[in-house]
Length: 235
Length: 109
Image (cartoon, rainbow over all chains, first blue to last red; front, side, top):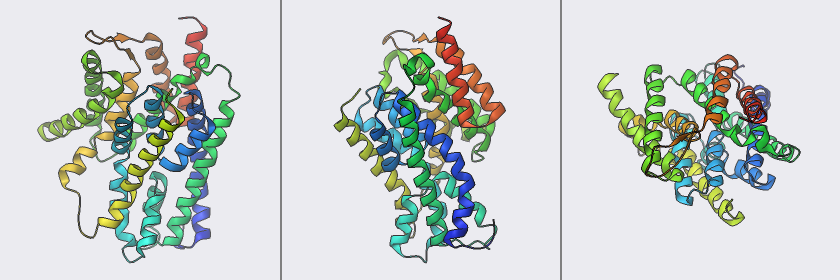
């Protein structure tokens, strides 16, 4: 990484992270297909929602027949972290045009955000529209194409249930949960582990009287509240 | 499986709220900032929702009674946790998860 902020430099610096996208994108495509969605729906999900882990949540809630508003609200909650990312990033584009600000925000993703935060260390804390937009576009195209390819590959995997593909989505959440716990420094690690345990209890008890298609949403809303209380009481 | 129209409407709805989460701070930041309490509340969302999605797959619901443990899914979760710790790579975790559940089902448990 260097101090240049042009498009070509951004392209070169974004390529390595694009390989990470390919794996996740292809996996999303296969999982979406195994869950019963067409390659077109998988592609539309990636193009319109464009939200990594949130797309897995959207697809799995659709598959179990959740109501529209609870899917939209759950997707919003999972992606609410984008509010924090763009709030952090926006000051660097204060002098840019409003249209450029909206474009950077529209294609902002976790990886381009992290890349941008790294880049700041080489550029005396400056970012350019050309650099960030290129990083965003490379990530967006890689994500859309790889998830579509994954969905097409999914066609050639017969009887996916036999191979456990229907449960692949859960492997993804276990993986994302683990990566979340080891990389997120905004909460103490003990508190995050405690929240996993509290969520298990809430899910178990919630199953008794809350229909399963809205249980995840209810547990998330209640669980986050409990988390805030515990953080203030013990951390 | 819901209709294509329902799926499309849901995807567009999710797309709009996600897009707003991304662009509104860029548009509004000069005037407002999030309250500390909201930021704190939101910081719990990722860990809680991912745990919830995992654990909800470990049980079968019987309304009015305690849920039933899904032993296959619980067993298949174990290699995933181990592979997550060792590889820290999502693709590896998913592949291990697939192979372990396939093995459990082929063995007829």
